[in-house]
Length: 245
Image (cartoon, rainbow, N blue to C red; front, side, top):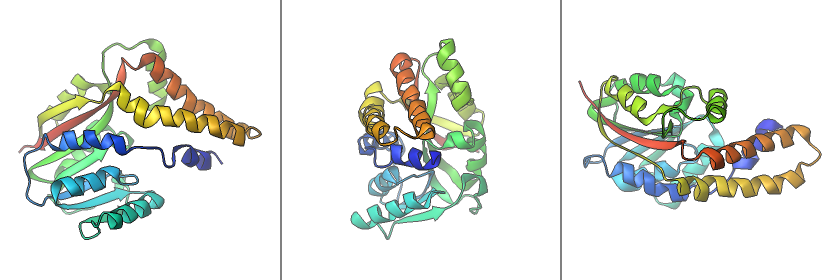
């Protein structure tokens, strides 16, 4: 039941507005001629489709949730991109591509599953010499956050680090830093937390007699409340890098 309501809470929330940040990050890369791209943890494929449009290359959207991949297939057909966008149901923990398969590896909001440093080091082998990696990752925007929000992130994602710490990891993992930027607060409110809060309120009535479901809704609301209180301290950032040898 908890997994079902988690899916119901997040299904169909607007995310297209964040594509402008995908475009901003992509434009920080040198021009590539029909690159081969892997989008790790692609979800329903909003960045995947955007990358295909931007690059005129071939893009693999990889995820372990088949309904997301089915949605990506529908989008690719809708935008007449089926010949350049393919899907792959595979875990980032079980990748077995030939070495140096991709000109660009892209990951928006998924590297936390494997860990930032581990992901950078393990994925590097799949990037062509002088190829690129772009990662969107939760980050501390300031050092020494208040104890309440630090304790919360210890439970949610122990690996969260400051932007400066992540840049140091990039430099020590065989990459040249091409650029980075943090998303503004309104990107989170307009495209995620605002619609999420409305969804939570709608579902409270539906699940008023289900303690487990209400507990999950409360957990989601806690995340919103904490961001409202501590948004100056944390958020997410794009990191744009190039493999060096």
